[in-house]
Structure formats: structure tokens, C-alpha cells
Image (cartoon, rainbow, N blue to C red; front, side, top):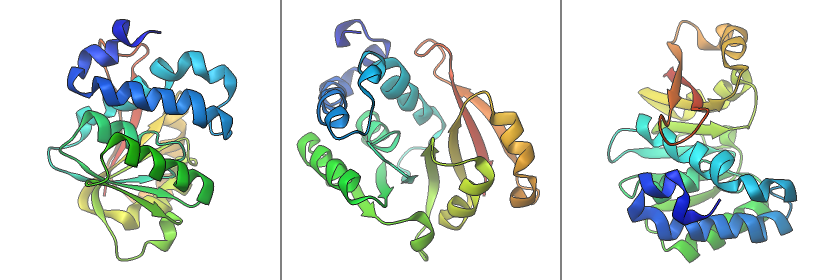
Length: 202
């Protein structure tokens, strides 16, 4: 899909240049270094970038965000691009992925508000943010054991999920301990199907 005909570019025109630059990083170095499969190149815009961008709808203005298991920057880097009001910590334990993230952050000129935090989420004791995001990291019950200690009381965890969302909420009941967990759809008119997010209130 060409950027000029891309719904996410139309939705976030001020972010267009950096979205295109990031797409080029993903389709180039991202594939070369094995973060994305070659077959994903044709789906980078709809399946990856747009799919991640629309969860910004759920994030309050001027928020600090921790993105667990950032990998190639999904969703954390995309959120940083489309929401310049956010401060984002990209949590990634693997060195080669962390190095990729640092390269991209530097190239996009967003280092003033995006920090690459090399390490595992469970190692970041004492740090917290009002919003914690994750995509394709772990089943919800396991993800919550990492995310809840990092989430400010009253904050929210936004876990990008697919058709398994309902089953994962049920399986996580022991970890949720009565906390509110709901399924929210994002990106109407931008992505089809809409992005499925499990939102948990900490």
C-alpha cells in the first residue's frame, strides 16, 4: 500500500514523514535482522503500523507510557510517532532489538521523549507509568504479572489481542483479582478489522 493512499497517513497527516521512515526501517533493516518475516513487507502498513497507531485513542493526553517487549517498535514507536505529547519507555530485553530501536529513535529525531529501556519488565522495580502497552508478548495472565507492577494505581494496561481476547480474560481471573478488564475496539474507519485491545484498570 502506498503511503499516499494509506488511511493511517490520512488520519495522522502531521506524522506522515516519520511513519513512512519507520515503515522503511521495518521493511529494510527490520526484515534483514529477522524482526519481521519477508512476507510481512506487503502488510507493514495495515497489519502493523495502522493496527498499532489506533490504540492511541485510548491514551490520555500528556501520558507517560511503558511498552513491554517493544521488539521492532510495535506499538511503542508507532505511538510515539502519532502522539508527540506522549513520553514513551520502550522495554526490550534483547540487545539486537534494543540497538535497532535506538537507531530508529535517533533517525526519527524523537529521542527527547522516547527512551529505550533494555531489560525485562520484571526487572524494572520501582518504575511505573499510568499507561502500559504490549503486543504479542505473552498470554494475558502472564503479561499481567509483568505489567501490573509497572502500572500506576488507577492507570491502565492496553494489551493488543485478537480473537482470543475473551478466553484470555477468563484465564487471567486469578491474576486480575477483581480488576476491571474489558475488550475495546479501536480504529473505526482507519483499520478493518478494528484493533482489539484488552484494557485492564490497575
